[in-house]
Image (tube, helix red, strand yellow):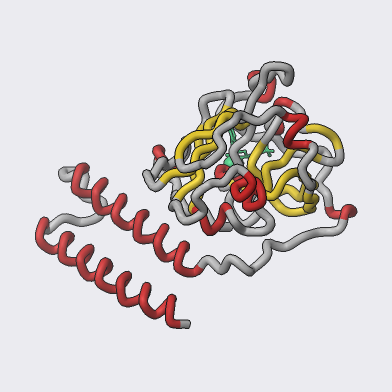
Length: 240
Ligand SMILES: Nc1nc2c(c(=O)[nH]1)N[C@H]1C(S)=C(S)[C@@H](COP(=O)(O)O)O[C@H]1N2
Ligand SMILES: [Mo]
């Protein structure tokens, strides 16, 4: 696998550079007297981890799928607030806004998204808090949608803005993965507010926090846009 070899070489260089940085400052990773250095080293390690995960990501490997009998009931909600605080989106005025490297930036209504071919999956969502659920999500393949709106699929990232202020971004290769969908339905019915109405990202190759709910805008960009939990230290690639 020549691609991996190339990257390995690159990664070794980075690892050596990291080692040198530690030696030069004479600083342990957890030395409290140098919090900025520790932060910088940890950030560098996390970025390195992103690159390792990106290099190992195989766009043709599918996340596991399950029979309907494996669906977790009741479903499990998670967000940075309690379930009764989930944003209530008015379908009549809701639009999916489009920004960045996209040829046709006309905003989309939910009915227009429903008119596109729909893809259904029974997959597992894994939250870093230590639980996992199997659910059924249906919607539009993100890769198909990106091509339809004439997005630059050579750009590096796809970013998401949510009705509750949450935000996320993913690498283009993962965005084009066949199981990555803009979901409209959960368990055979339109998404409810807590589970991301009217539109959420469902990406079973990544951890729960990458699955942005209640999306209001999608962007295509070469500028790294991070994410809500990533800003608080979670790993950005977030592979599962
Ligand atoms: N808009 C928004 N999306 C979000 C979150 C959030 O707080 N706001 N939480 C994330 C986290 S941490 C998880 S585990 C999943 C949970 O999805 P679920 O409620 O469908 O189980 O949503 C993700 N998407
Ligand atoms: Mo999560």
